[in-house]
Image (cartoon, rainbow, N blue to C red; front, top):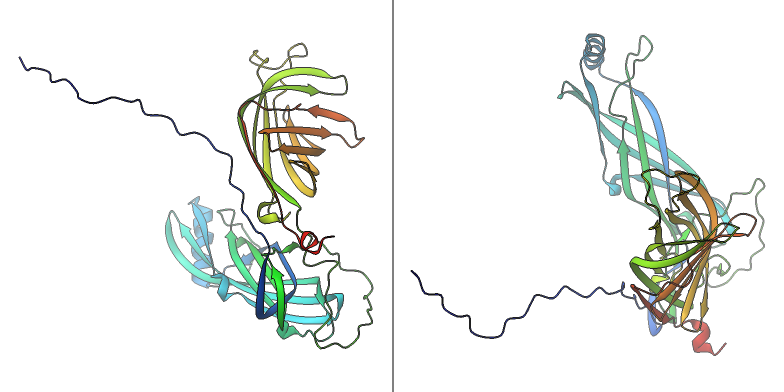
Length: 385
C-alpha cells in the first residue's frame, strides 16, 4: 500500500475573472503641424445589382440543359474579384456645395457551374454600377481630386440555374454587392488641432434641378462646414449588463413586470456619433406557461436601434436618442427610444410609440450593470466657447 504524502503550502481556489465594461476609446485634441491632402468630403455607401446571365459557352449550355432535363443537381458558385481590381470613373457634373458627381464602377466576378458537384465550366460576368451622388466639390476641385475605391465585393447566387428561353438556354442569377468609399481631397498646408474623423452617411438627396452656387476664387477651394466634418460628441459612454434585475413598466396602462435586462452599448466611441451601437433585450421572469395566454402574456422582447440621431450629455451621464425596432410577441414595431447611461453603473431605456406615448420604461437598472463615461475634448472647449 502506497503512502500518501501531504501537500505542502497554502491552497487557494481559482477565482473567476471579474467582468468589466467595454473600455473607452480616447480621441482627445492635440496640436499638429501637417502638410496633407485636406478631406473636403467623405462618404461610404453600398448598393447591389442583380441580373440573370446567359451561359456564354455553347457546350456548357447544352450540358446544363441536359442535366436539368435529367433531374441532375446543377449548382452555381460565384467568386468575387479583389476590391483593388474594381474600376471607377468619376465625372463632376456640377461643382458646388454640395455638387453633383457621377461615378461608374466596373466589376468582374467569376462564375462556376457544377453538375452533381463537378465543375463543367467557368466564365466571367462583368457588371457596372452607376451612382449619381452629392459631394462637396467647390470650384477648383476636379475629378482627379475625387478618390473612389471599393472596400469589399460580395458575390451571391441562389445556388441554382434557371431555365431560359430558346435559343439562349439556361440562365444564371448573380447578385453583386459593392461597399464603396469616396473621398474628395485637395493638397493644403495646415497648422491645426487635430483628431481622427469618420465618414458621413451618403444621405444628401440628388435634387431634380441642378443646384447653382456662386463661389469666390480663393487660394484653396472653399470649405463645406455644414456637411463635413460632422460635429463631434461632447461625451462618450459604454455599458454592459447581463441578467440585470429590472422592474419595468409596460403599455399605456402602466403594467409592472419583473424581469431581467441584457444591454451592450458603445456610444460615441472615439467621440464620433457614427461610431455608436447598442443592443437590448428584456426577459419576462414572471412568465411560466409554455405559451402566452391573455391572462399570462410573455412581455419578453428585443430592441435594436436603426438610427442614433443625437446624444445629450449631462452631469456624469449620456442620453442617446433615435429610432429602432422592437421584436415583441413575434411582431416588429418601430419605436422612438431614449437610452441613458450613468457613470454610477446604471442605465435606463425608455421606448415611445409614434404618438410619443411611453410604451416601455426599464426604470433605473443598477444591479449587475457596468459603465464607463468620459467627457470629450472639443474645439469649443479649447476656444472657451
